[in-house]
Image 1 (cartoon, helix red, strand yellow):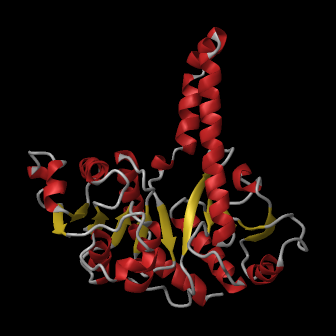
Image 2 (cartoon, helix red, strand yellow):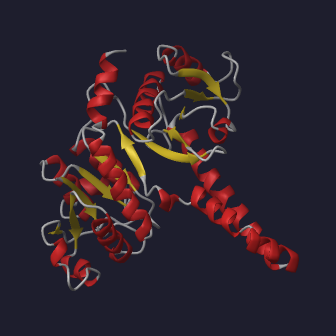
Image 3 (cartoon, one colour):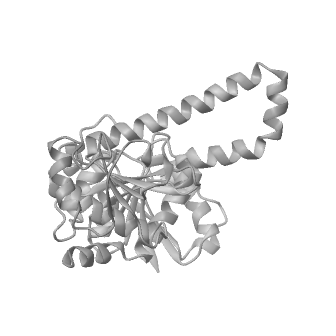
Length: 331
């Protein structure tokens, strides 16, 4: 049975949404166990009083410390009683197959990289984020923040990891990989992208340079970039989605005709919200490590935590690490 270690204390809103999401996941899906890591008394507050059905699938590991968003990422190595440290060590020691945290993303990434370790031949792990496309599917962008300074070989490895993840988790039989640049022509880009282009050409799945709009038009499935650019893309996309949503709400309220139209378009708006809501996928996988690590949004609600857990289960079932390793051997 798959076991997921869940940092129950790291999110912006404390244990309540995390524990609630964990319980929802346990009731909705069988075949896995959860270990909640954190303050036992705080966790117990949000667990159901009658949970006999969960008895064999739910454990609590006590921790007396929490890494806050204001703390430095390097502080985590000194604070071995923190919830994220103990959760990661459950994976390191073979007591869990994956770790999920909505806490300090830098601390989670640093700790998982050093305590769990990288897959052989992977120089740097990458955070992969889902993006909506106009055909109703998802594209995968990586890296979106783990590495702000990259070398060409890093972007080449990101392409391999993204291709494997898109095939095994997104179910895309032959994923198309693109390199984010300032133009589609082979000659476009800066020194990093030009050198990376030459390496990525080794991949049969590589389709060349792509521009920002191609992230959302479904022309490619995996978009490779360094973490500095990727994080800007991610935050900008989140901001645009939020602005459009607020704009629509405000304009609808100002017109009776618009209100009537909104009622008729209710299903469309619901589908739009689903496409841009991070809670639908729950978190971003940190690809390139020897075990699954899912980094969730600090503001995650119960639905986001539940879906992050489900994503971790799919990752473990997909045996992503060994498939990335195998792909690297054959390149």
